[in-house]
Image (cartoon, rainbow, N blue to C red):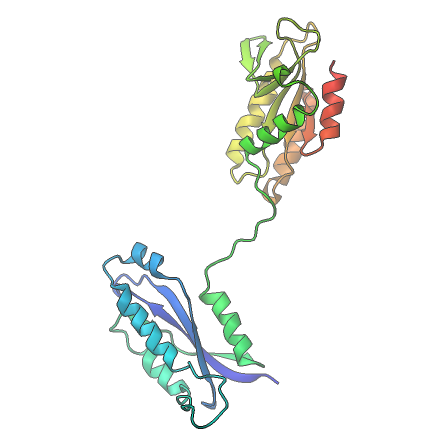
Length: 279
């Protein structure tokens, strides 16, 4: 059955006038004054140096240790000869502390919360308000350089390294232009390309980067001279990040309109079909 508890956030306010704060810990007390406990963050000195390099971290550490000492015997149920646990903090004590606005340590006014198990409730409050934010990756971030690296590695499984051309020049109606990678024809002695490729990552945060490479590829593909067949032009792309799904679909339609093949990493069989078929 859930019971009523109260919690306060313990903040370090190096310069009270500026109201910039670091959340140091959280304290929980029961409504009947039978339980109290606190949990503090372990690493805060780097944030303190960035926020207030003039504040002595030793003094803050001393406060944290003194406050922790009130709860250091929690869970010890034996009696003598061990010392008794200090009396639990009360709601009234928290209220009094929260009214003190003069120092660098501030305690927020107590707020009510319902817990079945206060130890788990304290842990959850700590994770929500005190612990450093955790960023969960949806998968490995593939930027353009990583896409190129994977593409070159895949091409080396299909053709000799000397057939892979970096920054190949293509003849277009408006003069020479380049794409990122190319594969030379097997029977070519003058560097003619069978395939020209542009790696594009749809996993990067910036849509501007995607648009820049997409539009360059679309322009080259539209402008390239195909009198003698010309190379197969490909966009080698990643799976899109959720924020770029509509941009990915729009880009795929543009590539189709200008005759660009879209190859998705890490599908080497699709790449093999294009490279071998182009010869």
